[in-house]
Length: 108
Image (cartoon, rainbow, N blue to C red; front, top):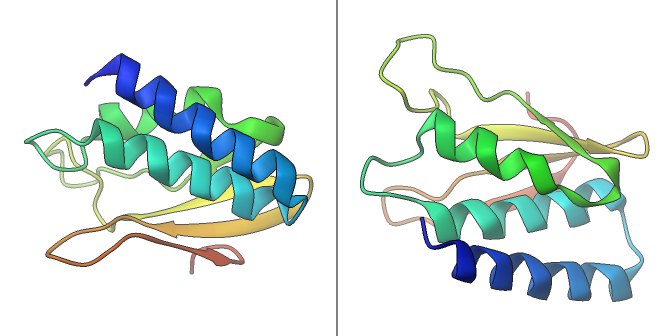
């Protein structure tokens, strides 16, 4: 993981999010997605990488749903719910040639 690039990506997203004044969960979800996309390693979406990215979420946000039930060290479904100020956002991690996405509401 390149910490300089990660910090730079986080700063850029935080600056944009701070100006947007929208849904705090959506903003936090977009921040989290930018950080994990930058930190993604050759092992895919490792639980360690995803959990590390949750430590610096803006707006007091929390990420839930990072699950490794099969014990392979990678997130099982590629979706994480982010909550901030009573709002929910669902982050879908990019994979298999598809872009990541952040949608309003909890992941189902």
